[in-house]
Amino acid sequence: MSTIFDSITVTGTGALNTTISNAAAVDLGRTGPREENIVKIPVAANIFSAGSHLYIEGTTNYNGLRNVYAVSSGFIHIYAKYTAETFAGTETVKVAIKPKGPYEFMGISIHLGAAPATSENITVTVDADAGSAFDVVADNANLQSLADHATPKENHKVCSAKDVLRVAWSNTDLKTYGLKLLFKMLCVCAMILFSADVYAAGSGTCTLSLQATPQDAKAIQLLTITWTGDASNGSVPTITCPAISGFVILGVTDPGSTAPTTLYDVNMYDSDSGPVFGGAMADRSATASEQAMPLVGGTYGPRWINGATTVTVTNNSVNSATGTIKIYAVR
Image (cartoon, rainbow, N blue to C red; front, side, top):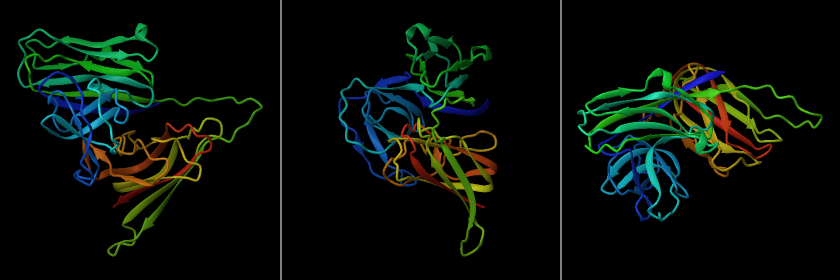
């Protein structure tokens, strides 16, 4: 079993949840810092700050963990592809995670600008996919008179791929806070014994080539990954790539002649099991070529690598689907 650590951060001055207003999403186009597409989501309360990672539920097109690029009166601005949608006013924005694989909750840490006077608990609950009978409280602390709190180590919890981890706190005193939620992905390898019905297993290859610039004949390192989904379930094995040394600047995904599942995911991990793109290669198009820069600490930019890497293709259920991934790094 290998591990991949990750975290989300949230800042604000109110409760850890709000509702989406009964209004339409607004497309701001490619107005992000590096021409990423930005969508304005109407919210009932401006309680979160830019840079927060928030979990949206109940919408048709914007569910899941989203990075907040900016805030304005009555809106949060998120990195997202735009799809027209008018919200009912019942959808929610909150602090939660639902990683795409089994994971372990490693704890939260929260720092307050000032200790609250009101007696209120911050709670972390595992919302089990198996049903409410299996829900577990992973942390429950009264923040009255406290400026800092961290989850005790003994409260770590192993969660399945479909469990949602939810953090709640009313913050009646409207204290400014900085919250970090740490979790650890669990990559489990299993041996499968097949019956006499034999299917073509998923596969992937990765090659390294050097590309020239006017100043340096070997300045750009290009990893080219080709993959094929399993003929029985569409799964793709983890693909090991040659070692590179430099800054990863861009990833490009191209669906093949047998298109994968819409919104399939691509991830790259370095030798320390750290996510290179920080989720920026999630939700890939099944019909068009797309590109993304690494997302590091909520900001898009180069990501240093020195050593071997692995690439994963997940959430594809199309049998024998194919695709190509190109990763560019500069020395």
